[in-house]
Length: 133
View 1 (cartoon, one colour):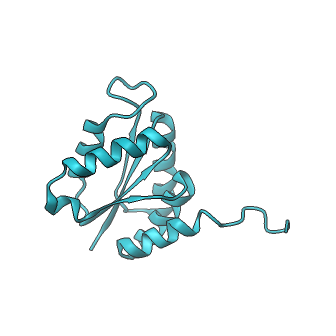
View 2: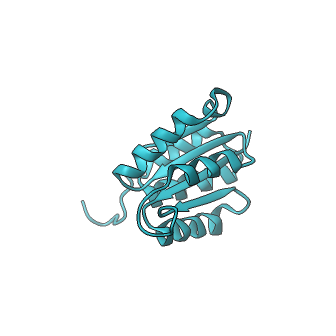
């Protein structure tokens, strides 16, 4: 099974930049940024999120969200998906950039969705400065 990532951010630039970073390290993993509202301003757009999820070719889709209403929009979309598609979609409660990066790298190794989610969750507690206790 293949894993794709959908990155939902209030900012088009944040979504695009995170997708670019993930692609640099994850190679052929399908990463779809969905930033901003329908007019390209700050916000979220459930219709664009749904189109992104339905448009990926992977068997499993991990959705990363940046802030509160992105989560609400993604949850709304999840309810609107067919039950068959919904089974392969997971909303991931992990840091947006670090979580997506970790999941993308894992997906590039052929890992399944569960392993990718575990890697994303570990990003929550990963220390950035190792010399400070």
